[in-house]
Image (cartoon, rainbow, N blue to C red; front, side, top):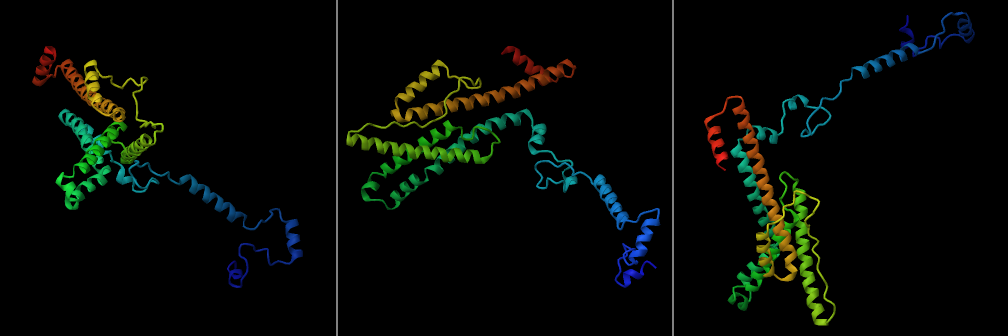
Length: 302
């Protein structure tokens, strides 16, 4: 009849709750088993919770490319491989060489594009002069505006090259964007410095100095390439033709260009060395191809 209390509003989980107090005291004294309400239910709940905690599966591992790091859709990422890894395995030696050379060309194109973006005000001034400038400026083909634009583009290119714009493949675009902004800030500081120099000359005061704070060669870094004596001579001749304030930026840009060329040569050498090792392994196993023999003859000749 355990269902009667639930119908009349009684507490089915505690059947002793409605007994006479004296009768309850007698049962508690005489009964060998002490009744504690909800003990069994609570114990069962604890056991169920413990079993659920033990059987709870850990989230499946997913690659970093997944937007759900908690393990959702892990079955879809089971056979995932990064694109760079797949391209590395499927690309030929020719593809790798072309990738290195294309990267060098793309860096030069990216520097040119970033320089044009930073010199957009000067370019707009030039275009407006050609469209609706004064008759004197148009008679001179807006040469003053052209010179301001050319100088801006030249200095922006120097700053971008010296600061390492686009010099690291696969780097986040935010880094190159910060370098582009810094190059433009350096150019604006340079223009402000030139105005301060003119003002100091007019007032006869001390002429301020300008320090672009460009990266310099670190002697502790063994990867830095030192120019040859002939190249240093060519650099000196080129630097002597520039104004003194522009020489540090041009020298830093030249050193950055030399480092970029050295990095390209180093990557090409790695590819050729790996290819030579593969030929040596095939020759040692007696599986050398005709092209391996020709390549070995050319290498001996060199």
